[in-house]
Image (tube, rainbow, N blue to C red; front, side, top):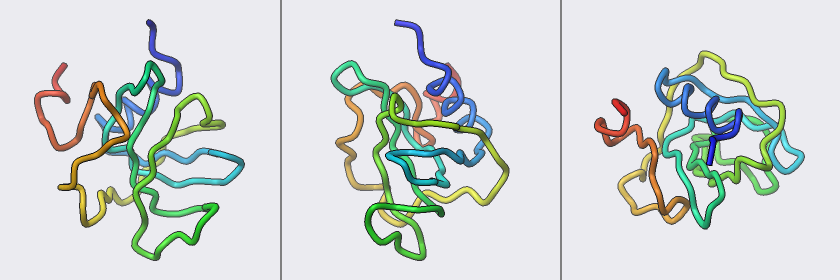
Length: 110
């Protein structure tokens, strides 16, 4: 299966440590993509949302979000502070098949 244009953009953002600005579920999001891969055949990205809107209250320091990339609209990269949150050490359940993870250097060299 060939990765979508959105998947390739998120991959580039991870490799370059760039933020992604997009619309997800009708809300403007400002994100740092952290882990990219698949779950149940769907392209997914574990991100840390650093700004924008949310259906719930976005804490001032940001919050973890698991995105289905098929629902991402108008995505683009931008420069900005790279943030990963305070608790990335917890196991993530967003992705089963990991393609890239900023915390696993071997995935960044594939």
